[in-house]
Amino acid sequence: MGSRIFSSILLWAIVASCILFYGPVEAVWLISAIAVLTLWEFFKLIRRLGIEPFDKVGILIGATLCLGPLYLEPFGFGSGPLLALAAIVFAVRILGEREADQRMESLAWTLFGIVYIPFMLSFLARTILIDSPVPNTGMLLSVWMIAVSKFCDVGALLFGLAFGRHKLAPEISPKKTWEGAIGGILTSIGIGAGLAYLFSDQFPPLFSPLLAGLLALPVAALAIVSDLVESIIKRRTNSKDAGATIPGIGGIFDLSDSLILTAPVGYVMFSLL
Image: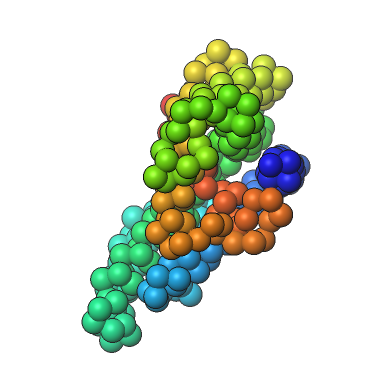
């Protein structure tokens, strides 16, 4: 438990520091690297099912999706045409490159991985690039999103160990409890409100500690759901962890999982502000 908490906090603290102390270009490349590594681990998990995804082209498209807000969208080329192109390319390839009993699975898992991981995480890149009269607002908002999402994991783990009695989803993740989930959400609310208070001069004027705490509630709830979805994928592939890259955590997928569903929601909320 101790190594898991320490590794998670340390690694995301490093990521947050890099986002804050480097420019938005470097920050977007960092998020893109995390997304690509997560997708790579996802494709490795799928191979354990005996299914061959189109991983090389899939990873290339995934990287393009994440870097698109920086290099493509300013010229009017959004992610929609790129996803359509990916579907066309893979649909053509399954005709001659996969056995009959693998065609649908290869197509479905490849497209799911691209949409679920790099496309969703590309909204974190969009958050970094949010334009505001206050310098670095987008980067600070992205750090807020990371902190709120990941501290939900930490809070859920600690509260679950201390007070956990009622199983949250025993068939998906037997160790998760309702008490842990509530503790994780409360932790996220406190972190979200605290960051808004400490950096009030750098956040948008409407982003008060009260509003930040309220917005942290759905973000934290989705972080829990996102973590459960990764657990479903790991159970489907008979895997305990997505990898063994990070001591106490597992793989990059185990680190980035809770941001996958929260990144788009955070971007929409921040855009409204």
